[in-house]
Image (cartoon, rainbow, N blue to C red; front, side, top):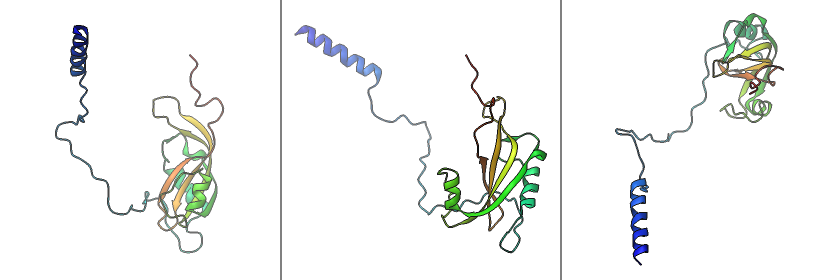
Length: 167
């Protein structure tokens, strides 16, 4: 009996020391953030191309001039080597399909310009490692505003690039 009392006392002391409290540990003066209640806003992107009236608001040449003078997300290297292979006017639903489920944040019927860019494209890594090379990428523009909405790569990294060092 005494042994059980000692064991239970020791258990109570251990639980007290380890802090079995279930209350949350919040920093002092923390401000609680509330979830938005209004409907989500339409993605705006950033100013890029001048929209021309008509069925094709901008041309392959317009997009080429833009990608050779503005660095797309995390892109490094010589922009003069970039070629715009095509500019297609497709819906946001088609963009999501081409990008394997990536959402544009726009209604499925929204008309967009999908530009395919041929490189070499060099994308910097989050660490200070060597940039990774890709052959093809894309830039997505809003047809109504000419704003750049998204950019990225379409292929896997070129051979010999982006491999983990052997240990």
